[in-house]
Image 1 (cartoon, rainbow, N blue to C red):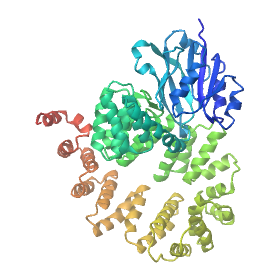
Image 2: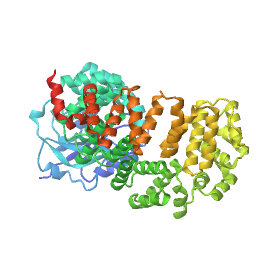
Image 3: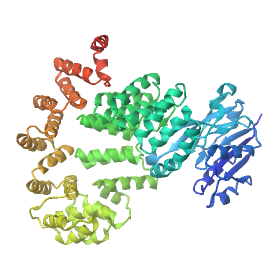
Image 4: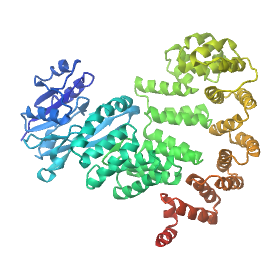
Length: 638
């Protein structure tokens, strides 16, 4: 037997979204009820096209009050609750759910985010129109079935509700959480339940006030150890603890929680992020591999955590641990899974610049895996290439015969690696009046020694007289005299990067020599830049000079050790890594040494460092799996 359904919505200034929502539901519900809490835009005019059941409600800082007011006007057998920035996906047939005659139905809510990503959570959105079912809580309102679940029987809906309200995450952070905070404080004061404390923690978490979030999460857990939101609570609590410097506590929570909830991909993903950001690369690698095995699943699903985003995190882990081949392959895997993502594309193209991959090889990968099905896909490609100042920008502008803003064509010519094309930009430089092009103009000025561009650079970069004196010396090909401000130093090293990208190595050498002559400390910065772009042999030669002058500088020792490691100079690596342990005792240094002995197949060295890791770093997991007997012996001592 067919059941009737009423859509109940509360709205305020939703003209941007409401029509899509109502269009998506008009064929599957019997009546539409709109409760307006004070709109002053076109929301009501749009709603009038779909229903005459529109009611005003004086806002009393209580979402449940407004929801319950809407429920009172519903006349159907069941009530469907949606927000204006949500919509039903195509071909939804609610009767296929309702034939089961349950009291309530839980829907997947797919939240669209930036960069073509999404995360999915669940919520009760359709339920029997019954006097005893009502909403509770001023904020984060929910049906009272949580406390009376034994009275009602529910089921998962076969359908998904889409939500676009997370598309602009900056606005969400700035407006939503500030708006919610006073209401949330009042709710916790009046009803300090586990659920409200959890949402209070989430509010501070969303405002990046992690220190304030932690005690609310902890108190929530102590009051509700059987709640369905515990996986999210543990994940957010661990993240907040890590952000406040309590790394061991964060990892301890997740090490236990991932055992209790082995199918929660997002939890495993965040565990990997925390491991990676603290230098626990072996454990991070295992976490992201586990994510790939699990796929996108769990109570809170962020799209890609079990697929392409895990591949990207693996690529970062491998790069940080000097496994460049694996890092490259992980980026290719991400392209294979999500080749239409601008974010994935950018990560891949950025890496190709750092490893000096031939343009033809890069182009082939783009055309194999970046799917250009429409004009938006082509626009995304152009945006990524432009933001990276990638040499392929010029190629694709020509390939697709694209007419665009003059400054974009100028940028394409500058980074085309074609000196003749680059020279024509001198005639077009007057069209480049945006701050984002200041660095590009400086590159052209330095390349052609065009001192006449100094005034344009000054206007765009807002440099003072001292800084402009150095810029003018640079454009005239003169030595750099006077001290360099940190801002100017950043600009000049960015210029060095640009010269590497367009493969002007003589000019790069000239500029780095000027920077080093100006300040010997710039010698190490130049070495880091060479290392970043994988000019390892040259970087090693230069670093040896720096090492002889500063044999106790941990940064120099670490970089030398890393460069020797990834080039298989293992005896030299051992000298530098062993020396590094005398200056630093953080976990990352121990893992570096273990990787070295592993690469040398030196089992005695591995065991020695492994024992030290077990004794000093209890949060590390991989070492206990490698030496389980030793692990049991350690535990028996306590």
